Length: 437
Image (cartoon, rainbow, N blue to C red):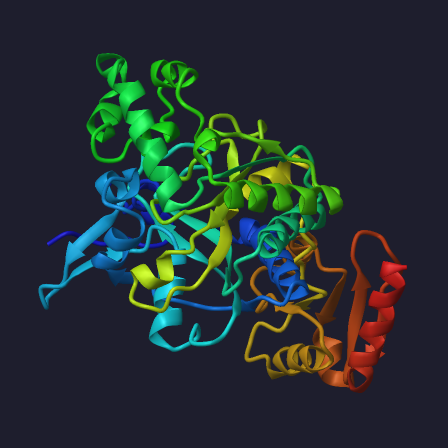
């Protein structure tokens, strides 16, 4: 039987268990930044009237086959799919739009209603791990269901723009496009297939395989040789109907009125089959190869495709790991998660007084760490200093005998004083207020 180790022995053991490749721990030194980001996400969603929805991490595999598309990289290569004990094929969700629509259909949220919804949480794709791309990653997304006009598309973009401002991010560029209707895309698809067939042997392997069944996916290829061939490909916009062009022009007018700069990229497509009409990406050159920070668009057919009534819809998703990296590059730091007070005691026996004092201070709304009398007073003071606390409360022998404690401001911010235990709450508040002035 394998021997399990713990504590310091586990650190040096050759057989110590590691996390799954591409699935990372978030340590206490990192979570403050994540909580700061998540608070901003909630704030910007609320400002536009979006409400949170939470869906399961595991869904039936059919949900993603029907929504994302069987010819996409996600379904073909990246999904974590398994068969459970009942023989059902289940998948760790690779994205959350399909789950949100499934939940809306299942619970009647979309029946004669409009919905502004947002979500955040972990997603899973079996990709080659690299900076900004992980097998377990986190997304924030919004879904606006029930509106067909360009106004909701402009709102989706404006929400993203406001989020960047709230996070202090600069240099993100917006690219937009329209994929048109099913009819327009069908005509374009045939023209694109005809053009690319002349270069079939020069296309990358994935593009060759997609040429007959789904040539639009080739527009999303990152292969340099294929990208060069695509420079001479037909333009989707030449196949748009008049109403589709006018819709896209109205969207551009709304974005210009909102002061949002954008670039029309006629070869921009999304890697998910459910997109129709308007699509977009926010991109940056600050993250190396991982240029896309946020992406989305319109997906008017998805609700009906998953069993609901035809419902127009638009939204986006952005990767939190990439946002965290951009926020760090911008130099913004999360608010401190340091305690207000560090309680130190020289009582080595049963110490109810220190426990009582710690709880009293917490009752007064303070964040308190108690050292449990581990080590000498000098060592405890060192730990108090490392904790970042503004004040140390010292319970010494006189505290027990005379009902008083010592208050010591940290980092030379004042003199040590003794106060009655009965006045501890208000006394500590006064000292912390002076320390912050």
